[in-house]
Image (cartoon, rainbow, N blue to C red; front, side, top):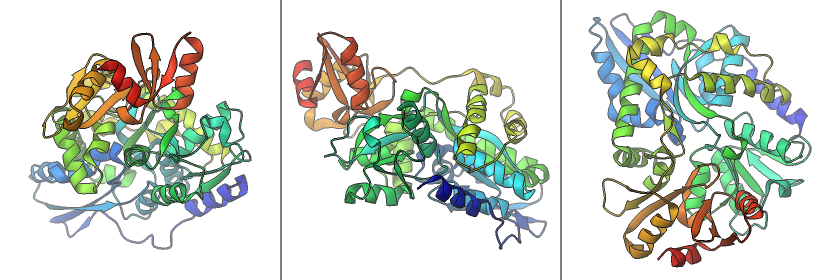
Length: 447
């Protein structure tokens, strides 16, 4: 897709909807319906969507208001953030969750139509950008981003994954508008295109890259954490809804915090719940949402994430997807601060856990952590038939990946995993004697 086509797509997205009548937050005074838009398979938002819904915490918080009203929650599931934004500005959704780039488009659309929205909390984040990955088919000969010049690359224009693709191409010296043939596709369509050979690469957000790698349908080409720029998903609410029903929004944010605490305390159980609700393999969910997963969940609106949001505006403007966006007026953490009270400052100061290698034994309710990838490999070698999932952090970016899908490097006695070939090569180039080895070889060396 060239710049003109992207501009047309953005113009279509920003047109007012004909069905603008009505309101999501409706009722006869004694009964109030609250509509929540979420993305069940975008598992970086589960604490505000899939997991939260399955736990019933929002409904419990609403029942605890005791304000004389009866509340009904309607959950609407979408594949991406764009339709949630369209429904919010049409007054059909009260609260929604989406990625950082869609959040900015959400802000721009609300601003343009005079129906402002507010970013009220964060769901999952990765401070380096590891939530987005560029993958290629298993048999592809592409080994670096520079090989994408002139190739067909599928992504969802305006998504966080598209933002990663644009920035990564720019760093590789490729014009993101003219240097590739960009295919604007929904994640599932792009995954099919990659499998069919009609796309040479796919740039997508959670959980698509991990899912395709797990299924043996793709391998990583570029780890988004190589950008070293924060990426996150968050919760947005219509400004008029927040002002009219602040207690309801605060109830949602309290429930989100409860779901976050549940995920942190029971990561395996949470992964299984999300898997049951979405049909995704629990092993894939755990890659992102586990104890040391790619995503860290915290509702606090951290200054680093807001700063990253400001930087994202220039990317969207260059693609003519938005104009100027007043990020400061869009970000509003008053409601989450009030909802979480004294505990908010502690959450605001908290950061992601240290990286670790993990094994999920078959039949186990907990994973096992190891001090090094080599120790994990030694365990796997001894329990080949008893491992449900094995995860290792990239030696340079820290991004967690499946041990059997990683690119392994032997450096003397050390065994080091990498998500993508390029980062492995960069390491071997700087360490004499280090070389890429197969997973089987790595297992043999560790056993």
